[in-house]
Length: 243
Ligand code: ARG
View: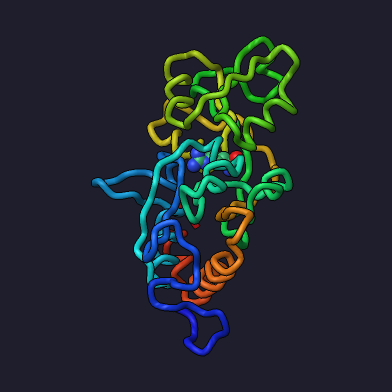
């Protein structure tokens, strides 16, 4: 936690915040999106989940996680409806999203990539001509695909990364356009490989409802800065990513 003397600082139970469920930080996320959010031994873990655990603890709040669809989360609808206090879902900060959401300070740098079967001859977006590419609905990967693939490439949107990956496994799409760290996670068995990376300069941010979230956003930024200062951020980073 922060210093006790700080103006507008934390109170036990987070009483100065208007929380969805008093005493708890209610987090919405689209799970699984490994290594950011996934289930292991009946527990939600991953880079986002571990950061949220620390942030909730720093604010003297319980952590409550709800698994929701990504599209409604990124549009702002889920948070505007009051389902959660915060969205932690490897969500890229974009100007469009900032119209409906408030983001805390960036916490992770990312980029797009193309995942293909190891024996595929697809090496570039141009090679997708006449083929189909899978994306997750509402993501920056979907937007990047729609903006950049050849005119005769079919872009097929799936609600979740799991359905997207299943479509690649079934041979229903020739490739997946998705955030690099998540696509990389699907290369571990050697069946799939990263054909190309796209320097989209994305930054992930925790997302809040536009209305009435100022105090919570500020408190989360304070906690994030503290986690960076005290080495906890690096420790969590090294758990999920290679240095
Ligand atoms: N970073 C991308 C975006 O913001 C994809 C995020 C998808 N996250 C998830 N948990 N499924 O659009």
